[in-house]
Length: 106
Image 1: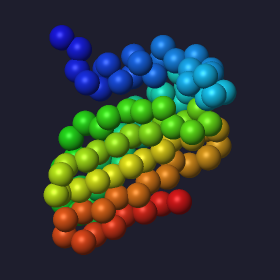
Image 2 (image 1 turned 30 degrees about the vertical axis):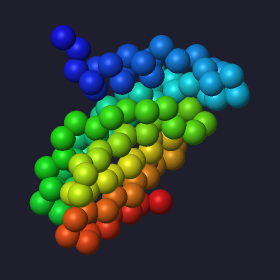
Image 3 (image 1 turned 120 degrees about the vertical axis):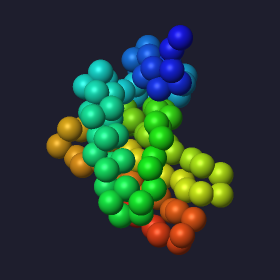
């Protein structure tokens, strides 16, 4: 049985440009791979900074061919990361946690 993460990634890989009939740019395989490799790095950073152990994120198509990673636990934390399509650009993130900690990289 496929995990939600596998389903999300398969869906992203199936997208073609103009998937939304509004000119949306689909993420490339390279961008999707960068997002999956970025996830453990960000999870480690969050654990070091907040002591929160993040589960597996949801993966979504972001703007301009990027990939968004989303962690959400009602009343506990919310973290959104964006891995840009341009591999020269660094991923960004914003998260807030129940203890008041805010993590942000723009």
